[in-house]
Length: 469
Ligand code: UDX
Image 1: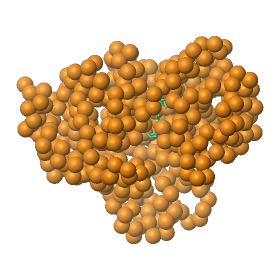
Image 2: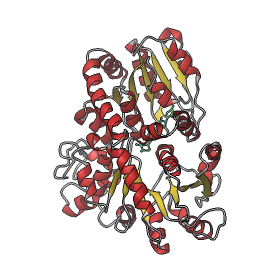
Image 3: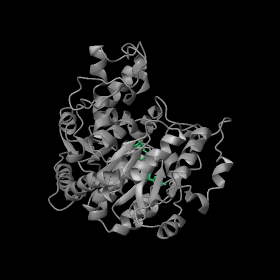
Image 4: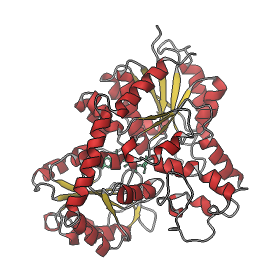
């Protein structure tokens, strides 16, 4: 029998690439020929990716153009991915339909949901396609309801500029959804007639014909939300937390290799030696993920808040996190003074999964990226939530109000930061720790033998094997 061949195509973003790479690794372990297809630009940023093939012989890497000139900004904006379509189609026609003697004929595609051209192309070529979502189901559900809310007219376009206003009537998101959780275009008065937005919503959420949704979450995490998400898809495969599922099914060292090879920046391992010298559960880990930005003054508020909290902290300050007034990335001179006196340790990029697993870590101040939340849950580290954009705001609400495993920063001034850190590492510590241990146990259970994520992965593997071409 011919080997099953799956093409996995992530959006060109760190937080999307890593979980899809975990899935690719798991499918290659199941015996599938897995082709991980990224853009040339991503490939240049992640030069170590191909080295993974040495450890995973069924895992292959290919890249295509994103249709943009070399020096074009890759900042995310409307239509960012629209120029990839012809290259994607060309790739499928020339490489994967079986003419290429290096690979078996293509069985199906697993695409990032945010790459709208993939659904059209797969339909045109008659190739089965699954949709993959790397963020929370609550954000997906909010998004899936935008068109309905526009039709109803009460909530979208936003009637005024109170972004904290709750949005009622979305099944599964009662008491959770607020205007600020939705994209800013929901404020546009002409949203219902705006062709660009209408086509964006249709492209991304026209899911009829897609074989199913693969999502990096599990039931206990989003209990009221997942049944509602399921009404939009033929089938839903909840396989989260994917990093932990791949850690448990594949040699641990190999899955850490995946984490480091999927990173754009080199992790600074020196922070592990520094953590070794810190007392148990004493250190706050601070990281804003792979794309969030902050102004110089915002970073200084964080710095003063952290230093004044009196707690040791390990802070990831990516070289491009700060936007100076002239648009250049500069680390303010005050931060260079951080040293033993202030109890802070700064790195450009950390080996995050290792850091969270370290006994010295007692809390995580995060931008609430979904991968960071899942990694913190697995490591049983309570959170402080500062959200930046996309799914992060509704994730923060889920973490603090529903799961009660973290505190939200109500404001971003130094005093609020200082007090929230002290509360989280002090009086609220035990309560938060107990809640996160409960949900972490569920995570361990779902990835174990007979656990739901483990079984859903097996079902996905079987469903792919049963695809009739
Ligand atoms: C963003 C979204 O907010 C997220 O929810 C969505 O699914 C993807 O896009 P990002 O900013 O990359 O994600 O954050 P997050 O989802 O938390 O992913 C960051 C990843 O980078 C994590 O897997 C984390 O372990 C890794 N990381 C981060 C490091 O390895 N080292 C670091 O220093 C910081």
